[in-house]
Image 1 (cartoon, rainbow, N blue to C red):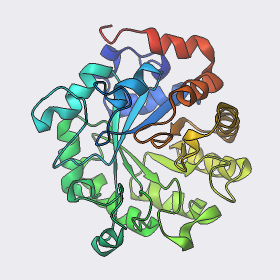
Image 2 (tube, rainbow, N blue to C red):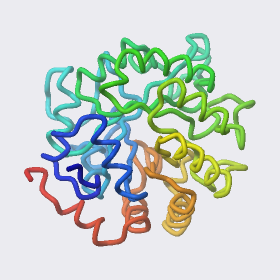
Image 3 (tube, rainbow, N blue to C red):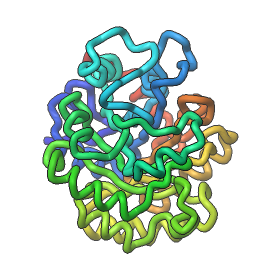
Amino acid sequence: MVKRLLDCTASDLRSYGKKALLQSIAASEGRVLACETIGITQPLLADVTNAEYAASLSADILLLNMFDVVHPVIQALPKVAPEETVRELKRLTGRVIGINLEPVNPQAAHSNDGTLWQMSAGRLATAQNAIRARDMGVDFILLTGNPGNGVTNEAIVSSLQQIRDAVGSDVILAAGKMHGAGVLSQSGANIMTQADAEAFIDAGADMILAPAPGTVPGITMDVVHHLADFVHSRGKLLMTAIGTSQEGADTATIRQIALLCKMAGADVHHIGDTGVPGMALPQNILAYSIAIRGERHTYHRMAQSINR
């Protein structure tokens, strides 16, 4: 019998495939927390990975942003063969591990201003990279876009179809955008429409990502609620996301966003990676977790040994 994800031990998760993980998330009734972290930046705790830090604060899913499957780097991870990077992080955290891949037009990628978000080949949303990710032990692939990379919803659909055919039976596939990603025509309330969600689901998405209410102009609780109802009617899951640096806001704001997401119908609550460079403010991860599931489940996740 599949347990709720918020009750799962590390050994439970090691035995779960894609179908069981999806059932486990759904059974948690909106109490699953996904923390996005960046591995290529200096970790907040110097010799402890940001992913480990987020796990210690009760994250259920660790989502690695800017993770290059060709040249994987997670600062402060013990030295292992590149192909063992994800499995080593799983060993240390006992968590579900996901990565972002980006359906970027190569010309758009080169137009990026050269900041932290500039693309590399191993971050592109291609079937080949998805196969690499699966073979490294990744449980979850999110097709999305980082700031300024020009990811369009049409490009997400095209990549999803290819990735579904390559790894769709093995890996949870999610799709959507947390912000406009540099595409003004698909910003604000146009970031994620019901038509976009339907196209993503038809292309193979198991989970739809939408901005959390209050994080993007025009994205209200009602907008996300209607989207959640549609996604659930298709038998899929919804993940709300804070990808607008509000993961660095005050805890009162975080609690408000968390409750709006839960009221809207989120199955998974995502909190972003740039409250400080590399992860959300630690106090905000904790505040979000307590807001959506209370101290009992939060501290249980924090206290539970990965050796169980």
